[in-house]
Image 1 (cartoon, rainbow, N blue to C red):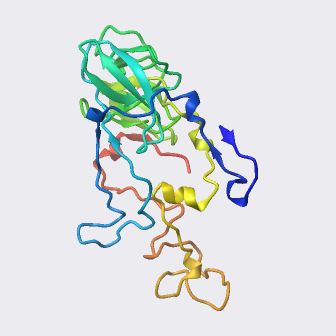
Image 2 (cartoon, helix red, strand yellow):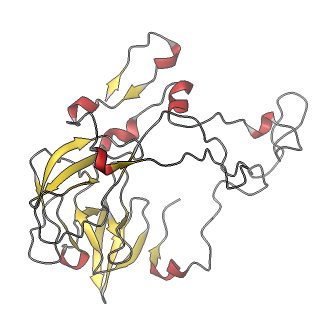
Image 3 (cartoon, rainbow, N blue to C red):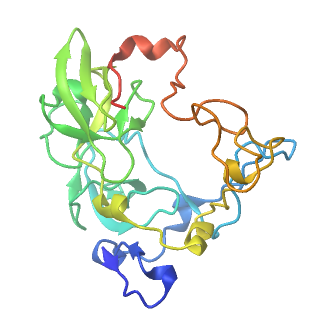
Length: 276
């Protein structure tokens, strides 16, 4: 982490990640990069459906291989790169047949490391990808599938990892970073290790302009609005909200309220809910 001297109020608390220590490439490969349309929180009719989104620096989307389906073929890490669309670093790998792709970089990866993805006969080594049934209990994994062959869905953000808790009846019990424990089919795949860029959680934005660069627009407090605009609005001067619990602009509770549907089909796979 890099901490700035307090030469101005804007950067008094600001901190950034020293990317030069981790990244080895300045530009991505053109064939592995595309464009995403920026919607600025608007739906197909142009109405804002997600507030506080818009603007930000221009960026290109990196096509990440979450499946790594090229079984048994060794891949060598060419470069470690920055991805503006995710908190983790990404690794550019080249297979022995010459094909390149991007994957989520595990913590501790270096240029020249060799990764293998296979369903059998490979060692339990950081970066290798295999089925959950072949991974020992107590190991930490990332980029975990929920359905076989669908690609990794769990444990993809910076510094996170998923712990293998138990194995029974064709399922593996895993503990997510939130504390939730759930069952996943043992034929689903996962990568060994934890996700790179562990210092990301310590970053302090520091100033409003930096949030705007990230595409985050200003937020207006509900207490500063009128009653017609927000349940917390109104009153003479600075008033308390006058409600037992905080609400959003549409009257829905926002703290300690369960948002997961009781009819969700995958509820049967959750053994222990995440901690409050």
